[in-house]
Amino acid sequence: MSTNMKPEARLRSLTPYICVDDGRRALDWYVRAFDAHRRDEPIIMDDGRIGHAELSIGDSVLMLADEWPEEGLLGPKARGGPSQSLYLTVPDVDQVVSRAVALGAELTRPVQDHPYGRNGVINDPFGHRWMITSPVAEI
View 1 (spheres, rainbow, N blue to C red):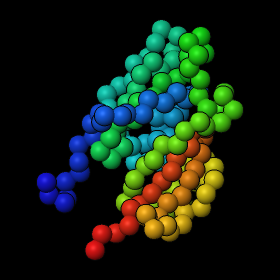
View 2: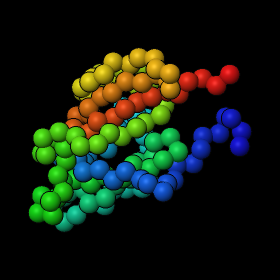
View 3: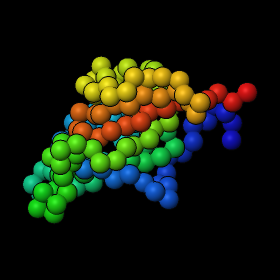
């Protein structure tokens, strides 16, 4: 593969499927904050909630749906905070974290250098915790 080609986003062995309190707003936010791309149109249920939507971010897919309290599916804000972290590798962690914070994310750990790469941590406006990293440059 040429280094100029973007790898195709696809389902991986493990694909995150998150629950959010406002699916339409979340789709727009992830597109703007993480340079995500919509994969097809969301499935809208009869009551107007998003039943299923997919975004490509880098070479991976993120699935999401609105909350379904009647099935026990609630986003992290309704449950009192995140219970997991989403680990996102990007070319420029400083740019992505700054953009996410400007768009309403909470900065929970500033971007810093570590032996394994440069990273920072945010909570997005929907309560999900993201560890955003740029790996150590290979020499």
